[in-house]
Figure 1 (cartoon, rainbow, N blue to C red):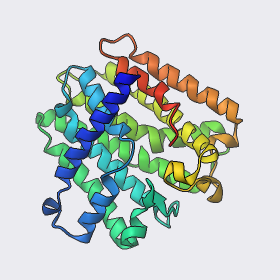
Figure 2 (figure 1 turned 180 degrees about the vertical axis):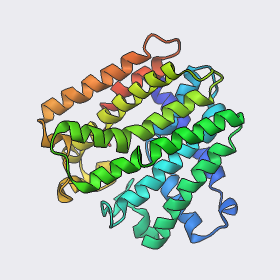
Figure 3 (figure 1 turned 135 degrees about the horizontal axis):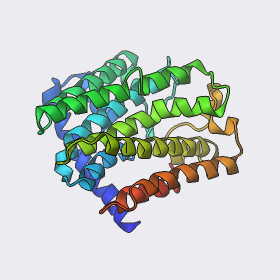
Length: 292
């Protein structure tokens, strides 16, 4: 696990530097919206999605620099989703990553535009990444599929409907809202590598990412009842406050722990036998121990 922790820190620094450069105020006309984009994207978060993009690129023979533009694009989409998720029309949360959420710091109109601009800019970053036109088109296609109506946005709609009659319905919600962007990150890392794209490999990556995403969300639900606002950097109990179903609506804490471990173990095994697959395989089980 020591190598994994070191790699997590290294990749987080790499993506932070890349995002800082791509979100330079001069590139974004130096407006309040530009400052809100930087505020929401820089200086926080676990950077798990960027880590997956970088490490799957490494796993298939690439370098960290090969994946940085695609990784940055995924982090921008993630940041936009959090801005919109926190808005009064959505989850109405005032805190994010231990500081006021974007709309509390900049106002709702500016935050809404900052989210829109981050989403748009993410596809620009994919389009100008230092890869072949074919790879960049595939990256844009993958990210748009995973972030749009059939992916993250579709999951957010299900979340707002507050209609999960059973665990299978909740799994679908989490696969879309959380798992699809994780799938985008890992797949974009594979696309950034020197390997020729193989649909069978992409399917195995999807299995890994969706299993990891569901386990991650189960742990989020558990942290929402186990942790504190200070530890999480955002309000605890907000799902219950907003009438949302969580995994604990359908199973006990012990059962949820077991389900998260089962999913994480499955994800870990998918690349355990591949050369240099240790870091990717260790991540799912490591995330079971997180505190925020």
